[in-house]
Image (cartoon, rainbow, N blue to C red; front, top):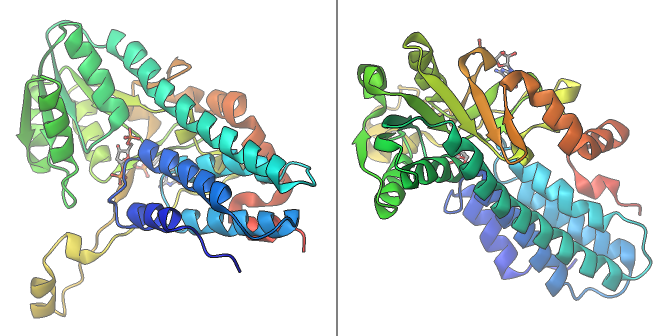
Amino acid sequence: MEAFPREVVEIAEGIRSMKIRGAGKIARSAAEALKIAAEKYSGGRDVNVFRKYMARAADYLLSTRPTAVSLPNAVMYVMQAVFQPADDIEVLRNSIISTANRFINESLEAVKRIAEFGSKRIKENSVILTHCHSTAAVSVITEAYRQGKVVKVYSTETRPFYQGRITTRQLLENGVPVVQIPDSAVRYIMHEIDHVVIGADTITSNGAVVNKIGTSQVALAAHEARVRVFVAAETYKFSPMTVIGELVPIEYRDPTEVVPADWLEAHKNVKVLNPSFDVTPPEYIDAIITEVGVIPPQAAIMILTDRLGWAIDKIKQSGLTKLRFEDLVEE
Ligand code: 5GP
Ligand code: RI2
């Protein structure tokens, strides 16, 4: 059995360990990994052996993190090229490379469009609150700042992994005035806030937003204070699986991200939980900013049918919710 190239393993393990993180980056990296797997394949000319190898690579990438649907969406997108009819592996290889490149380019373009659309929703002299680190959210905030509309940004630390510090650093690099606060200060500070701008890992068919743990508390505090919540999310963050009733799996990470290993060791009878994501109901979200337009969360199903109809059909036809690509290759 052909081993995966070193780069593919590095990308997969980088996603698992969160060296590569952020739903969009994870998706682009997975597409890149499939491209490299195809480019470097040297296991002979049998099309089905090649398909099996690509399916194993896809399943390996899917095993890294469970929650962000951008990962299976990107993998499914590229794998369409693997499963097209062909009797020459060079045809498949070239098609995989161009499909992966198309996904990566479109994904980067999508973030630019989101910045353009989202910045229009930010009013003059705004104070913004953001949570965690989202490239899409940072790009909206930065574009609005560039247009002279942002006075200040509050960035939460985002315990336990502290992705908020990445946001703070990036905003500073972009010249945006930013204040770092602990997550627990969100409600205290909310009276100063004009808009909450966040990203998303997965959006369900009923418009619920799965994002970094703490997001639903931020949205709840915003709702109470009548502060608008904007979610910046590319269309490949909408989940086709939720259309057939699947629930979004919530990742639980290692307790040592919450408390140090020696503390755990000294308190063996204490159970520590580290859920990484939560679900914000659509009622707490004012708008979702996508690259094809600004929509209310209740219109999530329109994005799903318009943009991911092909994936919904595939899932319905082939039981792909199990998402084991290896099972789909004929022996
Ligand atoms: P809550 O449980 O916070 O009251 O609301 C969660 C919202 O997300 C509800 O609107 C629920 O229908 C919706 N939702 C959609 N998909 C999921 C899912 O996979 N998990 C959870 N927990 N909620 C989901
Ligand atoms: P972009 C991140 O998850 C955060 O929850 C963030 O809001 C979301 O991905 C989207 O990020 P994690 O990978 O795609 O840090 O907008 O667990 O960068």
